[in-house]
Length: 480
Image (cartoon, rainbow, N blue to C red; front, side, top):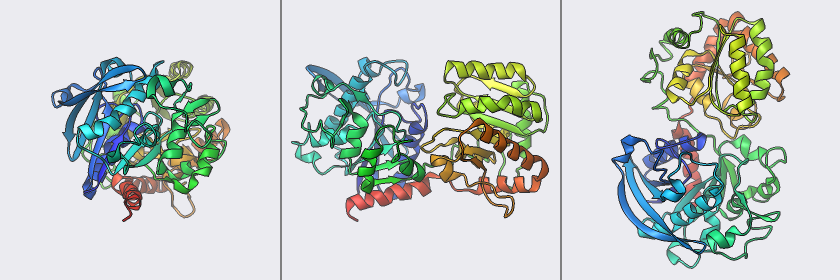
């Protein structure tokens, strides 16, 4: 049985900040059904681990990792969920904090994490055939396997895959970390290695040294090879395009299922779609909006400009004035955007509900209640909320970029096709025109709108489909 080890800085159901966390739960679970020994290694964020999993953790082993001149403790805890075994690397100094990221010593924290992963392998008697790393926090592992740990014969046959979930974050640090953290020389500190101007770039090292590089959608794999989306590494990605591929993320269709979801007031499926209207009324009562059968638009997002929240704000005032609609927003982010959305609620109290928090249960209630979900991201490597929305019969309105473009085919009223509404030109004017068209379709062409709802609910965004693509890539690396 072939062995796969996923390495990441976060993973559901323990802790997540976004799509990476979702993928680290759903993809290993799907691949474990394909006769693979699939395991996952994560940091042990002691303060953030849900209580229900704390009692299941078992201490497996511990050892010391050389971080520069220091000998640093690394404990290995483990638990198994379904067919997937998890390893959690414990060090309270690095991971016993109140957030996953955003600290001045993140380079040292995740430098230690990557070395601890490699040094763990022999100690837990699990040498994977493929070590699948994710984003900058683990992207330096392919470099370390060919440099610091190249002398360990047991590790020489490990093949590596790097998945890029977001090019914007790369792990760029002063070259002093080569001595102060990794204890390696500068033989690969060059243009074909991990050198980025005068700095060390974890992501660049991963791209250059991994055996395969993937992104979380086919369009994003193409986009990041251009200056507009490559975040300074587009040339590196073009040079490595022979090993680059894009596989669209999926969603966990067991969790996101309106037929069985215990978080929503009324369960439904394609045959009982009328119950969706009951969820709209339940949500309106819960957040004190007038109970009206007007189109309900939702936004479930980080409130940042990358997510297009600035162009949404720019068009929202005019849209709410001209149309009888309601908008419910859920998310946290930039302080100025949070303030502006709160002001929008104050200005339109019967039409707008702004909820500045992270709340997965409420998010699922929103999916079940809404007619449309707005995702106007400037760029979106994959996007999951559009797939979750469609699973609940909520029609997406998206900027046609990255995974949004790959998952939402535009509505065509002439041949009654498509899964949602899209716009190409990233501007508030174009977004406003698209909102108007979606509103007009809902009001004036209800049959076409309901047909689209049915297509959305029937679309297959399961991980089973996506996992087959990863499996094909692994088999290529296995030589099968």
